[in-house]
Length: 148
Image 1: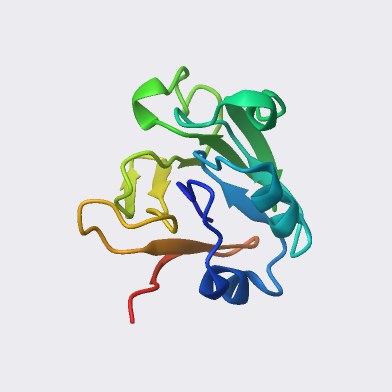
Image 2 (image 1 turned 90 degrees about the vertical axis):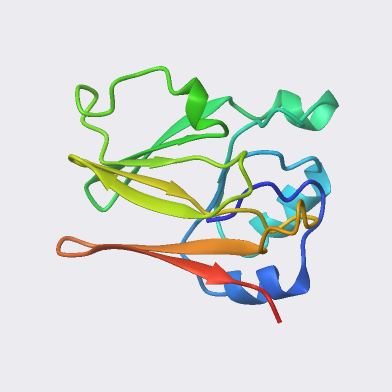
């Protein structure tokens, strides 16, 4: 999982994404070329963020519902724009970006994930991404720091 690339695809991000089954991008992509580069690594689900504009952004949905290994994942950019009750919608995982701050919190039956930002550094926040492991017995999320 990545978010808030703002047009920057770091080499270390590409290296970490080698061999993944799927890439989830929680918005502020800001580059159609970046998405194409990601698609060379794995299938990509991406949503439009508040900084995504122009022709490249037209093809990005504002939200995406993804079913993986029996889990329903709801992908959006800004958690403040969550437009449904995840429990009522039988969604187990909410993935968002926007804040550039990595977080993972279980609230009741729902796991809320923000992988942080792998784009240009903002406000001295760390550069982070995340890995979600799902199977019939496991739902685990790990925040990956790309700080040297």
